[in-house]
Image 1 (cartoon, rainbow, N blue to C red):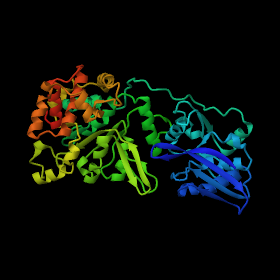
Image 2: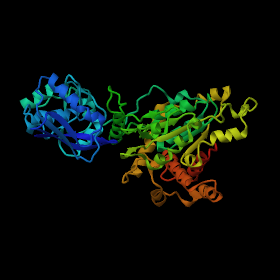
Image 3: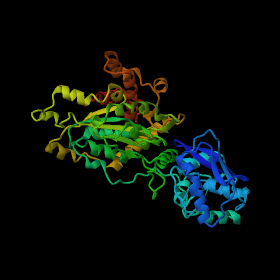
Image 4: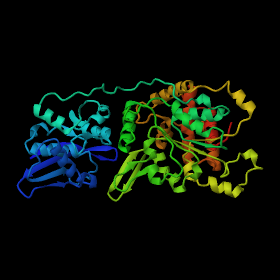
Length: 509
């Protein structure tokens, strides 16, 4: 009998699993127990072929492989290597005591090669909770595995190389790269730039405020006015991800299988723009057997852009309401519930009507007021109540375009102001679990960060008239704090609260 360890992925959380193999008397065969799925059940054939083709004897006996805890569902092919090592240890091919402590992750090819698997980073993060550990991974996953600090990573190319190392008992092979270090907050010039968008000074200002405070944005206007250009340039105003946030984002993309192999650590905020034909499962996450993160989780700590928002089905848009409030999304299936992080900035863009004609070209627009109301009515009131800033993007004349060219600023300049404002907010929230103004919950907002009565006056009048909801009041106060941070003020004044209110109401000041 031999025992080793592996990791099971539950959402983006790694759970250690003990793999036991017993080679004993009985009818020859291999039996796998411990709630395996179909892919894991097929590991029996992959492991047998890999061992035989690597010129190691397959035990002519009854082999029982147990995965503990037995009540934990186990999915995927990342257990192949651990099962093979446990069988090799039980058969006496490798010393059983050498395989007891390390974690083994990887899928075996029929010829014994180790193939990369998804979710290596969150798996090793889960293994690292056990203390000072050693993790054996495929060579193709070694750079991603080395992102976790204080973990000894052993890159292995095939089963024969692993067995030879276990037999020798010497030092493991070293990764041929340097482990990742914490990114610095330096601002690099991206491929796209905010200076490309001219004629929309109010929208550019709204973009700066959203980047500084992590707020949501709604843009309404005819086609060709720059809504998509503005949304695509929002990530260029955001600072690099901090190390803990970068690990979160990288873990999600690793589980989804979309992590770039050339750059395993995602240090920049992601930008996700799903097509309007996307389903609710594609947006919030789902799957029949293996639950995968959706667009809201792939946009975690970044931007989720939904162009032509009224073209999305209404139930898909309403599915955004819960993650916008809580910062996470829970996907429930028959096998259980899985929670994914989903703290993102939502940017919605829409045309004023289905025919996409400008408001000032009513003579060519064939949409009746009823059609327009029905078109924009797909965006429900509760969803719009969660949007911090609303901007109307109108077409600009040639004179306005030429005049605005002298006022446009590059992304680097605006990003520097955003970084200063975020630093002010971070110092104010230093003793709290929040980093930006948009994350402050309502009770704490009114208890510790409520503006003065004079500054609250514009909002209380709208609250009394019914033009502003209680949730909308919280949104306005958060935006007012961001405007104060950009202005270098210690607290919001009536100027900031009035400007924040106008942004929430969609009124250009």
